Every structure is written in structure tokens, then in C-alpha cells.
Amino acid sequence: MSLLAGRLGRYGEAAARWREVWQGDLLAAAFGVVAVFAFAPFGLYPLAVLSLAGLLWCIGPLSWKRAFRRGFVFGMAEFLAGVYWIYISLHSMGGVAGPIATLMLLMLVAIMALYSAAACALAAAWSPAGWKRALLLFPAAWVFLEWTRGWFLSGFPWLSLGYSQVDSVLAGFAPYIGGFGASLVVVLSAGLLLMLLEAKSLRRAAIMAAALVALWCAGWGLGQLRWTHPAGPKLSVSLMQGDVPQDQKWEPEAFTPTLDLYRKLTDDNWSSKLIVWPEAAVPAYQDEVQIDYLDPLEADAREHGSDILLGVPTYDSHDYYNSVISLGSSDGTYDKRKLVPFGENFEFLPQWTKDLLRDADLPYSSFTPGAREQRLLEAAGYAVGTSICYEDAYSSEIMLALPQAAFLVNVSNDGWFGDSIALPQHLEIARMRAIETGRWLLRATNTGLTAIVDDRGRIVAAAPADQVYVLKGEIQPLAGATPVTRWGDVPVALLSFVTVLGFAWRSRRGGA
Image (tube, rainbow, N blue to C red; front, side, top):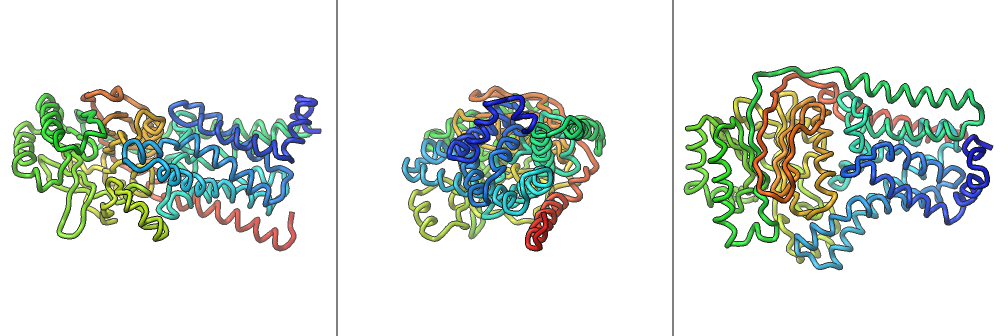
């Protein structure tokens, strides 16, 4: 009898019996819901470790087929609880019929659940329950599949475990091994916790406890080191939050009031060296407002010694883009590269599904991805690492601007998600990018959450949601490169893949 079962007595024995029958599926679903509370806005980051330890315990004695089912149930519960807001963006904000929006949400959730299901199946198939599974195979399988989830079929890295740790000491690993590396440390911690609770001797329990403490202490220690340094004096900034209602944003009667609002907010803040407007702040294509609106705005910016970054749709002779342009001392355009699945991009779906979604006339569905290689925008004398909305969920996209960029700017319109947990979740993801790159981050949104984030991922200042607001502050432009800026996610992904491959090879040869 393990120490855990000994402590819990008959309750532990009952739980062990439940694990092998249908009640175990309910436990796995419960742990999936618990995992969501590790992320923003709840921020109970230890629950990420607890939930994964619980899932690992749930698959303990099962065959790979039953472990697959447990992992699938876990994933379904986690993503239904964690990304339900996709229904809001599609139905309430996008005008997609309720049944179609529900179908799309369930499709996405089911696809996401397959990744946790596969991790559990691989762990059960290639290693018996014990320390090798808990500390080697399961962490490697989970993180390799989480990394795959970040790019396969366009990718959807939301709820990657590493994001839940931006406020924990485990964030100290991020500048070295990235967000997926932080995920690896979370799953490894879960394995150590389970081995601690199941230890059959005090000596083994002490070893697991010491390893767990050492791992978290290492995160704290690594977080004290700095890989970047000031690139110049501090920079005064103003972030514009227009709070234009999403259901009115593109209405003809809202056009002039929206332009007047952003112009007034800007005219009141020429004292800032850099002014940032959110995604698609201008509700028209650039060429339609260039002469009467943007040219006078740029002239005033140059007169006051300010630069402006603003979101506006653009087009050329063939394609339409979701873009950010710079006005002032340096002109330039950045076109969004990574489009949102189901919203801006559904080319990866089967033809019948694409036809259905096109018939639904989804907003932004006609945008074209920007070129992979683009010249960095410049503002206030510095190169800027620019991203639009969902792009900041992809570390590989942000790394393209490093180490040249002195700071990061993300413009977004999270009004698509209503008053849901998507807003703080998105800010949490953006904070991980600041930690990884060792750069300050400016995040300007239409309705919230607009924020200034320092190079440690800490929120220095934030605007209240659902208000017209100008967030003012100072940032420190930085130079230099963190290790993950140079290496990317490849080392963690490769290490995880090789570990999984090693267990597969051992299994074929009959190894334990």
C-alpha cells in the first residue's frame, strides 16, 4: 500500500477502485476542469501540477486504449471549460448561427482533446506505471504533442501549460527553454508529486520531495539572471483603448465617430514619444482614409516629435491584409502572418467545411497571410517586434523580430470574446512572450485588456476593461538575446521526441 493509500485509508482504496471503472472517467474530467483554474484570470498555478498528477494517476493501471479515453475526456473537459468563449466570438459577435457555432466549438475541442489522449495512450503503451513513465515518458509525450498542437493544422497553442506559470518561479525557465520548456517542467513536477505520494518508503518519498523542491528552486534562480540590457533612454508611451462596441464597429454610422475618437485621444497625448492604437482601430482600408485622415495625422505626429503605430486593414491589387502601419519618423507596414483558425483562416479544413464557413460569411475570412519575412516596423527610433491579436500565442512568430527589436507591441481586438476569460488568458500568453524574449511589451486593445508589461512579464500598468481609456507610462528599450531567442523551441521539442522514440524502441524490443 502506498503512502497515499495509507493516509487516505478506505477513501484511497475506493479511489483506486474507481480509477479502473467508469468513475475514473469522471475523475479525469474533473482534473481537466481543475487545470483551467491554473490559468488567468484565476491564476492558481499550482493546480496545473495537481491536475496533471491526477491525470497521470487516473491512467495508472489501464491499457493504452482506456488511457486514450481518459486523456480524451480530460482534454474535452479542459478545453470546453477553457475556450468556451469561441462560441461567443462566432455566434454573439460574428453572427454565425448557434448550431454552426456550437459545431465549430465542439470540433475544435475534440481535436484538442486528441493530443492529451495520445499522450496518455503512449505513456500507457510503452511504459508500466512507475517512475520511468511519470518522470520521462509522460512529460516527453505531453510536451512533444503540445508543441505539435502549436503548429499542426494551423496550430492552436491556447492553454499550453507553460502559460499558467507566468507568475510562478517556473517562469524562470522560459528565457532558456521557452513556454514549452515551462510546460515540460510542469509535467515533470506532476510526475514527481505523484511519485512522492505513491512512495512506499520514507527514503523514496524524501528523494522525490527533494527533487521537486530543487526543480522549483532552480526556476527561481534562473529567473534572477538577465540576458538583456538597456538600448537607450526610457520611452514615454500612450496606448489608446477606444472601447468601440464590436457589434457597432463596422457599421457606417460608427465610422466618423470612431475616427474622431481616436484623433481626439491622440491630440491629447502628443507629449508621448510613441502612441499605439489597437487592431483595426481604423474601420476602413488604408487607401480609403489615407489623404483625408492618415496624412494629416502623420503631419501632426512629425510636428510633435511623436510616432504612431495603428491597426488598419490594407490591400494590394490581389489580396487583403490585417495590418499595422507606422506614422511619423519612419513609415512602414506589418501584415499579419498568422491568421486565426475558423475566423481568418480555414484553408486547412476539408472542402465541405470550408464551403459551410464561407456561406456563414465570417468576418475577416478574406484576409491573406502576410509574408514570412517582413522588414521590422520602426518607431521612436527603435525596431519594433510587432504582432496582431492571436499571433502572440506563437513564440516562433515573435522570435522572428529578435534580437533586432528593442521592445514588443501587440495590437488586438479582444472585443470578439465579450466579457469572458479569453481576455485575461490572452494577456497571460502575451506576458510569456515578454519573459521569453527579455523585452518590454506594449499591448493595445479595443476593449481590454490594454497593458504595459516589463521584461519579466510583470504587469506594470493596465487599463480597466470596457472603458475609453489612454494608458500612459514609460518603457525601457532593451538589446541582447535570451537563449531561447537564439535556439527557439527546437531543443525542447527534439529532446521530447527523442525520449518518446527511445521508449518506443524499448517497447518493440520488449524492454521495461
